[in-house]
Each structure stands twice: as C-alpha cells, then as structure tokens.
Amino acid sequence: MSASVKAAVPILPAVDVATSLAWWTDVCGFTESFRDNTPPNYVGISRDGASIHIASITDKTVGKAVGEQTMVRIVVDDVTLFFEEYKQRGGKVHPNGGLARKPWGTLEFAAHDPNGVCVTFLE
Image 1 (cartoon, helix red, strand yellow):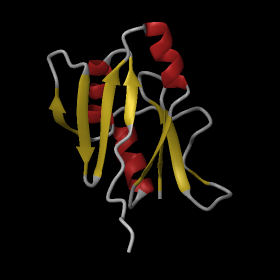
Image 2 (cartoon, one colour):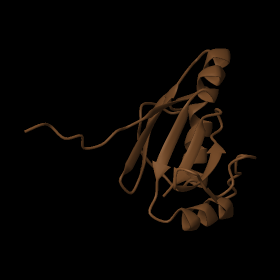
Image 3 (cartoon, rainbow, N blue to C red):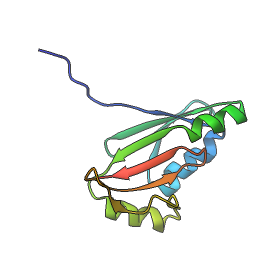
Image 4 (tube, rainbow, N blue to C red):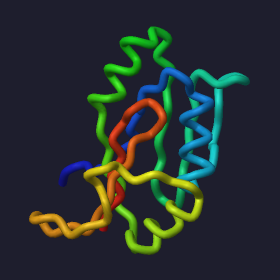
C-alpha cells in the first residue's frame, strides 16, 4: 500500500500581497481564508476545492522577476462559464491566452495576476 496525495497548495509570489489578494478575490472569485497581518504579507485563499497561498517578496525587482517566471494551472469543471464570470468581474485575458482548445486536449484561457504570475484556468 502507498500513501496518496490529497491536495497541493501552490504558494505564489507577490510584491504587493494586498493587490494580488484583491485580484484573486474580486476578479477570480476566490475567498480569503486567512492572513498574517493587515496589510497582509502572507494570505491563504480558496475556491471550492482549490487552495492557494500568496507570499510577499520584499525586494520588488526580485519579486517581479520571480512572479514573471511562475505559472499555475487551475482545473475547473466548466471553463467556459468560469471565463464568462472572469470577464464580467473585469478580468483581463493574456494577449495570447484566449479561451481555446489546446493540442494536448484541454480547453483553457490564461491571465496574469498583478505580480506577473501566469495563471491558466482549464478543463
């Protein structure tokens, strides 16, 4: 018998945690689960079965560089509906990341969070 993996919780970098938190909650529909301080340096968010943490990187140059090299893929049950919700909340789609069926079979769209993290929502 082997152990099973129950979940994964990515920790995303942010130069400004409050700004990233607002994008994730106001635009992507996640809910704040916890925070360390006000304003926050470390927060947890969730939506349905997914959890994400956002951590402050105090050096703005390093933080932006790390953010722009970070990617996260989030699986949803109806990406077309999620896409419409995202746009209605004011979400901007990556210029090359419109809703499309990819050669590997997923239907997905991509965006950048305020720190430059590439976020792909897919089914």
